[in-house]
Amino acid sequence: MGRIAVSRTSSPRARSVARPLGGAPTLLVTLIVALAAEAGPGRGDLAAQAPDAPPATDANLRVFLDCQRCDFDHFRREVTFVDYVRDRADADLHVLVTSENTGGGGESYSLFFIGLGDLAGTQDTLSFVSRQSDTEDEIRTGLVETFKMGLMRHVAGTPAARLIDIRYEAPAATGQQRMPTDDPWNLWVFEMRVGGEIEGESRQRSASLDGSLSASRTTEDLKIDISSFGRFESDRFELTDDTIVSTARDLNQEALVVWSVGPHWSAGVRASAITSTEVNQDLTIRAAPAIEYSVYPYAESTRRQISVLYSVGVAAFDYEEITLFDQMAETLAEQRLELSAQIRQPWGDVRASLEGSSFLHDLSVHRIDLFANIEYRIFRGLAVDVRGNVARVKDQIYVRRAEVSNEEIFLERTRLGTDFEYGLELGLSFTFGSVFNTVVNPRFGSNRDRRFFN
Image (cartoon, rainbow, N blue to C red):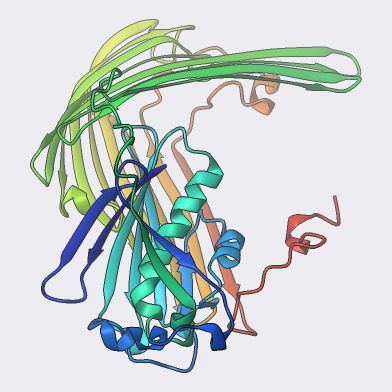
């Protein structure tokens, strides 16, 4: 199903263990819920036997599970020997879960166990890697088992410790089939998708068809990513005195090759070919080498990353209709500079990017984009979410000379000329009441799952 890696950072001498699941001896943490009187002698002495364990208490461990993509109800059903709280201010342990895509099409999850209060200063890091072929159930099962493993030393000093039995199940000594070491695909991963949609009523109908194909190969030294996407859409509207028929098509092929140049540097080449009715491009081909510097090592990308990327290349345009600049085709040199930052900490998340691009023959033909997203926990129960973007647009050389019809504007079939773009979202949430969040009751669903008014 995947693999679990463990590292502990609470002591000067850090330890790390990595063991694959399924092909090697597996450490299974089996939770046996029994009556206190039935617990064997010595079960309650786990805290004394473990030098890093917290002192024994009369209360269960309070855990704040901070995972945006986890099945929280499943975690609460499967791991019942801790108390879940809604806010990290009430927790003894903050479990922060992050993820990023792997070269094989799966995901690498990092679970950070951050001690709070009496456990402050302790931190363990465990990881679980899923495969592309894993189902959602297999992924959440792997995450739950990793979650259990990380809780063990923290629950050692709680009443739940004497009800937990840790077992080791070794594989059979003989007859075990060895997993093949040769990969016939040589780390290449392919994915294909095709889909369509039809909807309508008496006076209008629409149909769309889209598909994608991707191929990727990722190693520590080289990453190759090739993708192709296509979409065709048709809409028909019967008005009082007229009938409108509108079509749109988009085809996009991209290729990326990146070489690792140390823990902070990388170099690569990006190429693309697109055709799109929305931006008046019959065929546009781009190719540009690039170099990137990461302030923090790439190994820390799941928690924090600040990087600078610069590329310079060539773009060849073949337009569907003549542009405002009297061009049907042209080839131009262009450059791009990107500064991006992403930080995920116990207090919240920050993502921001500043991108600038221009054509080298005329720097006044340029575009500057600024994007930021901040999710911040101000104090107990109060959180703010701000998301915004603003762009200075001076590079629309593709805008066609012909007048845009009202139908094209309403259906957003053609990109209109503009000097700027912007957007802003602001959210504020406040939660109060019981600090515990342990019980699961799915009966009749939830008010948040249904809409009472249309």
